[in-house]
Figure 1 (tube, rainbow, N blue to C red):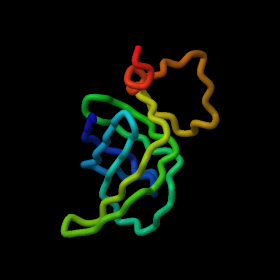
Figure 2: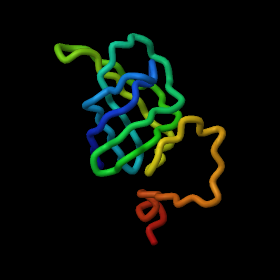
Figure 3: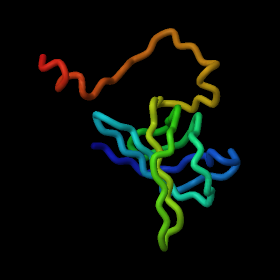
Length: 113
């Protein structure tokens, strides 16, 4: 599992930044955790941010999986369907690619080749 720390543009108001965001990438799941004052459990279409070790990213189809609260405030956790590295895509449905490089980190374990 790879873990990264960075910041994202707030998916709730598109003006504020949220710092201390944790991004976890494993063979099975892409997950993001961040502090939030929002109390809703809505899924988020896109999240854009910058992370140490990766750079600019776009996370697409983020599904809310958990929410916890404590002395540090409210932490929300989302599972991510797609992660695009190298830039920010504000409207993924309007983007078309001439070519795409796909990284399948679990392919070797799956095929045993």
